[in-house]
Length: 302
Image (cartoon, rainbow, N blue to C red; front, side, top):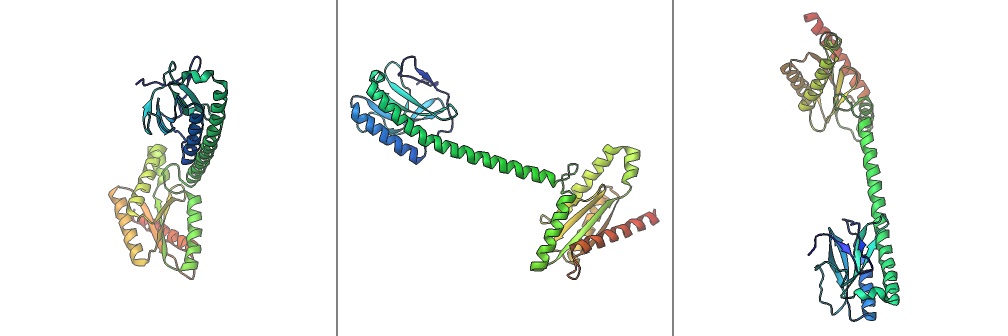
């Protein structure tokens, strides 16, 4: 069987631009079955089949009664022997064909050709409508996906890959609303890199960027999956720790400090739990104050 498809049977044959996603739903098959049966009544000496285009082959999906071919048979119409009417989608691609096996001369029967063309238009209209609907759905999905990607990009710090300040503010406000409505605990951890300006001046901004990426990675690795890590300033990071009380907060802060020390990163850390009488914003401010207190102590020791 030839591997290439030249849909023939008419003068000169018809070359098909293949559509690899043949839109043959149950509805299309049903309409095509009626078409094949109708044509077979008018030309009983020809085996009529409806076939979908699969790669470069035609695969039978519907036959008239009494024919030699069955569903799933692969056929390669011979332009000298068979009659083939390609069915074309709005994008110009062929998705299926109405075939008369052994009926090449049918193309000279004007009445039969007109009937075939009418059925071809009907089947194509049904398939085309479904194809366009699927295309619109795919386009809508692509637009929605891109919109989501844009939103993610808008909420992500380009340098470190963690959430940015905009995402942090949104998360803090959302968590505050959630805690006011449902209760529960949450905490904020603040991390500030020591002497970023000195690092940039002495070793270059590229090295400073590498250190910031390292801090972000260490914070992510020591945080829980449910926690949000964000870069809230040039050299400042924050963690929104959900369902976190004082004992868990102390563990998280201690683990983070140890991890930073192991990486040789000098940074100050502060943490505070949300108090029902205050809120998430106050917990952030308190954690920030504790971080600055630690930074001051570190400077005194140095």
